[in-house]
Length: 293
Image (cartoon, rainbow, N blue to C red):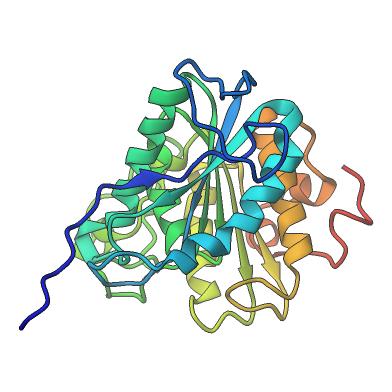
């Protein structure tokens, strides 16, 4: 007897982290931007897990678990500022070509944050496929920052688009006149105008090509000077070898982008430097320990 496919669930926000006093305690939210503890929420980090190029089945729970340590690190660092975090639960495990399912789920999640908390700034934090979804969903007015870890982009000519085909956007973000389907289908960058954008990629990533994320960042930098990219030398896709430094960089970026803290000098330098310097900035060993904010 053939098995019936499981029904597709709606996208969901995981339970909030960082609302109550102890990290890891989950609170049911009241309307009006405060948790059960009465603590006001002044900013939200939305964590977008990794996934697969294709697949309409339910996402693996392991992908959501993989981003929870970073979520915990962010809410600990941002607790005094009123930061909370949610892990987004996708409807499907894959990007699925033009459907761009996780990007749609990310856009829904931002709108849901605004419905729950009101007018608070949002940082989209994505890993792998989730980083691509975060970049796509950045156009919502509530989004102030995007952090992409080991972002996945399809190989040129695959998935209906080509990050390699630069759109030659001008200062206003308008694309150059048509140059064929590949140019029009390239992953968009115009939605990043006015946002702080940070990409982080391991140079030994065997799963998502670091060069493709560089090319995307190069296009984004043309229209948005507040774009930078760090390279983690010798690290792989999961960025585990230098996880402490990567998490410290994420904290520094989020606090600066959402709450106007001063960025650490390497982040300031990366934002200010033209390509390729600001897009191939090495993440120094000991970042967050040896460097002062």
